Image 1: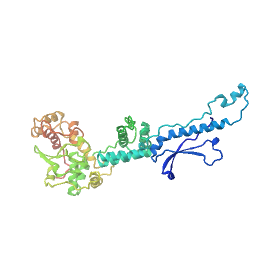
Image 2: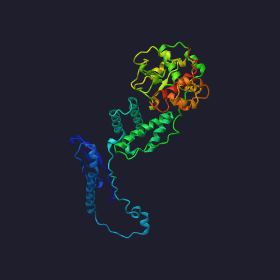
Image 3: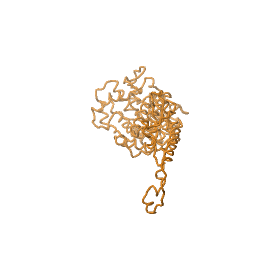
Image 4: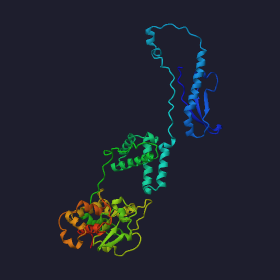
Length: 434
């Protein structure tokens, strides 16, 4: 009828028991002199979601009433005298050229999206699911919530079903601008992906749009800490160091274990088998990954430091809310490194790199490792033969916890323990005071 109708609105009216009403402003042609220029129709519900579902049908009914009223108005118009127009008049009149140009277009009445799928409402539901099912530890659950909320702050409070792969890249761009490392960016985006996996499981989306995003060029490259020079190792251990800290530093330097693995050690994890004293990390409560469950033999020069056994934890570094002690231990031990070097790339974690370098020079050949792991020989049979070559990557990784976890195979624990002890015993520990 040549009229563009106003779109419908949902309004909650307290005087009507907080029910939701569909409200549409009348076209000017049928407003007349009345002050009531709007049509209001109740959805008969106080539930916003139900009201949104009812809105399209109610709006269509109101628009039909407008059509009827406008037709009546049109019938009252006086007849007009028609005349033929020239081709030039038709071409100069846009309405005559296109008679559909003034056709009323109703606003699209798409099915409204479920408000509960907005990120602001879906993220708390997701976190509650993680907590209820104890998925991951406390720190991981807290990190997932933080990353999801950060993602929402960057891309907006989207409905989950409106999230595209583009939004993951937008989030990655934002983190890149913050100067974050590539590893951190990948980790953050993976947690958004896990959020969307949950949406898949709930039937909200058919597939995870963030799967297989390519983030190789985002963020700073991983930082590599430098190993200590032999002279620095000697200077570190030449300092006046309390007994507890000296033992912690010695274990870090001679085992390749991670800081938290050492800081959380219990006396019950110090064991002996086949004449070898070792740390049993297979049952540690806090581990980096399954490959970290392993046995770590101790050098004979270190064993006397653990003769006076106690009970419970070996060290008293405070444990934080995430069940870790590495932060407290790191702060305490760092000062003995900082007093020797001001190189920012030489930190407590540098002991792992230093240990690996020492291991490479221990003189264990690949062939000897294979013979040791066959279970047919014992350490004393080959001690004199370990003089040349280098430690294999396989053995190096097994000692430092980078590959398969230790299990009792056909040769028992000695199958895993003896080759490592052979390599450890060949380490030069001249940096340790006599």
